[in-house]
Amino acid sequence: MILRIAPAVAKAAIASGVARRPITDFKAYEEKLSGFVFRSGFIMRPIFEQAKATPKRVIYADGEDERVLRAAQIAKEGGFAVPILIGRSSVIETRCQRYGLSIRPGRDVEVINPEDDPRYRDYVAPLIERVGRKGVAPDAARTLVRTNSTVIAAIAVMRGDADAMIAGLEGRFHSKLRNIRDIIGLREGVRDLSAKTLMITSKGNFFLADTHVAQEPSAKDIADIAILSAHHVSRFGITPKIALVSHSDFGDSDTKSAQKMRIAFDYILKIDPELVVDGEM
Image (tube, rainbow, N blue to C red; front, side, top):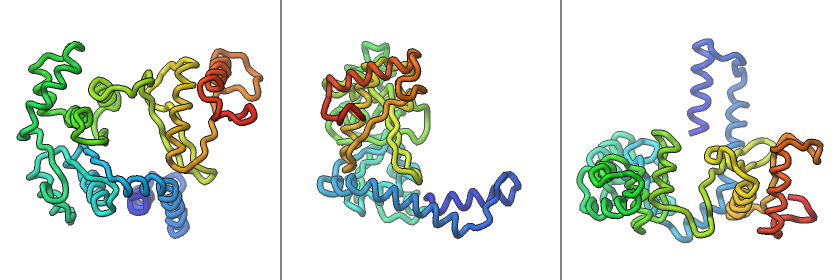
């Protein structure tokens, strides 16, 4: 997608006159993009190998979207996952044919049809149990199970009908996150959710946390996020090296932000000292 879309957008920007720095050598530009694609595939290789060894049932909330259908076909053909799509079977069938995809609902991928699925009642009851005390009335819960694909996917994971879920192509991030928190919940010992972003640059690969969820994290929150992120990064076959980022270098500032990072460092020393080598992270 990067190799196809990015050059097309750049050419359109040049043609329309909005490009401030028009690209003069598209061959060099495409070679640079290829380098990013290669690095992306390289860093994901350990994850792909683990996925192929034990394919998991992955439920896609936006199962009618072209991008999801293409991803589901790649996952199916590559043996990375067992795709489950949320959507109308007739729409999925039609779009697979339109986009030239070989997968078919009911044959290659399981489909949960919000409009007509025998599991409907089985999904309503656990939703009422989880969110009823948070102000969601039974009638509203029934409507959610018919209309909200993120809720359906989260219930499937919570019930064990799927091992993982992918959602968020459309809609508001925090509303979807709230559904996941309320329905699936947190792992024992984890106090809250956090987000992680992978940036692949010419200077290396960087995992940033938390970029989306925690607005005013405490020092303890930062320590927890750092430790959980480090353990997750190790799944990529990478030895994590943590940097607690503030505007202070080598203790030259005593602002609240800088002090918070020093306290967080001390927390990490106490919670997981193996992450710290010779007093550095």
